[in-house]
Length: 172
Image (tube, rainbow, N blue to C red; front, top):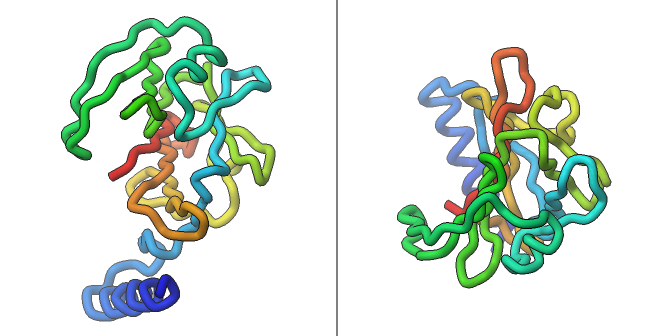
């Protein structure tokens, strides 16, 4: 079923490229997929990490006392939760599970278990895993969960000189 869904997406993209003249390299469908459970977040430097789905207590246990914890309504997903802040870096929780994050300083880094490589604000684009697609100054990776494509993305926003300025993960 997933193969048929991906075939339809690819065919629709080819039609859009041919009919509308959209550049083929602009396709979000051609980017690399990352397994959700492969994503790690850690303090830079540091070895302890958290991952999506971790509890608020576990995050605080690894990262220490936060700057603030605020009640938050997440309109885009129609849920209430909490926002934990660490000096401008935001971690979003719903039902005591980490569902997203925004990193704006190099105090934290995001990595992949499979590559044992971490990426932080200020790194060059050449540090990212191979196969990313850049569109509108952002390198985007599609997210899968046990091989099933999710409507979620890990996005590395880039400056004009192609250094990472913001790292965001959010369920859309």
